[in-house]
Length: 491
Image 1 (cartoon, rainbow, N blue to C red):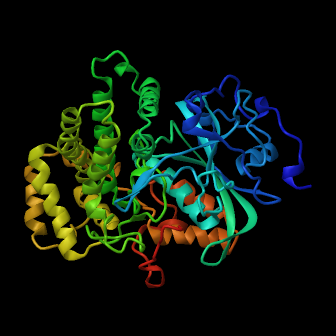
Image 2: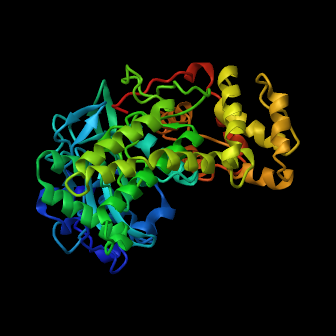
Image 3: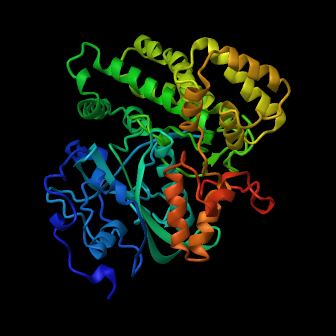
């Protein structure tokens, strides 16, 4: 019997008691729209489940697998007793620098909200069908893009980068038309909230300033509660968004992550990495690396991310101008540079064995990166080599002046044994390069090898541990046949 024809399951067999509660849907109806999933496909198959994440969304670890699959496929409502059971939200955004007045959750539906083990959560299904904001889209997701987002979300979390999280992959066994007909899937993801810069832009540019205020009050009340009694709550809120976003961007640079589509609708108000589309991790260290082959002008090149993030924060400042005087918003924006520099040192220092990098360490760190760029060196393996060198077991990457650089590092006066421990915890043994993601996609789509996929998932979510021998080849640069993989917004 198809799963969609099974009777509904009482929520207490899936969710822990007293977990589900209204949060975002307490806001005015203009900010969200009731939306049930379309029950995509006839016989969904649970491809992978992130067991460790279940408590974060209040799901029972021992829940009935069939009922859980139904829920995570969109074939069963969450049975959240308070209406609505599920919803989609509307937002706007600057896409490649051009304002689009209405976007929204075109293929994402929130099926539950509440407070789990780690605090507030929204549980979304991505690819479970159309919403009023799908525009010309079909509301579906293809398996390859789901695999990419699923692995990237959990890999980034393991690297210490703030991100939305991934809970499951369900194959729909339904074809989805993109450039060709591809297998479809539904991914469950969660976050404390999925509110974006674009939510504020939508209401500001429509002149609906009361909704801008309502949304700001909600975010402050949920996540910046100490600002509620402040004399300057909205100005300080903007300061925090600037700080969170600057530190996030710094971590992207350190782990070698290029987002690919840094539109304002893809920017989280909480400073989370959100919406993994044509992302890419560096192979060679190249600030001009463009991971999205649809980005013909290089607007979202790896090295431009700090500049673009700042541009997006300016767009958010405009959207908050009905709440905060312009002069105060400018003061907030001026915090970005110092906050990014601080975050950059905090993110990069440990990769060089420094618990805390000081401002005077900046030239030493930058010169190493300059050497890698000139050499055309592979980014992840160069830092693996640096770790071994700190341990006294290898050589530095052979860029011009490497010997002199090594002497400067020694003059820093770090304890080598302690520095080695710091570097080992900061330089991963495996990185989710495009060719690694493609290997995972082929394993599932072509070979149905879920054992390999699970093994790779475990390695990517424990990236600083030694790789099992069978995965060791995935630590290095791509083989020639998988080099230069092109990824587009449809990914």
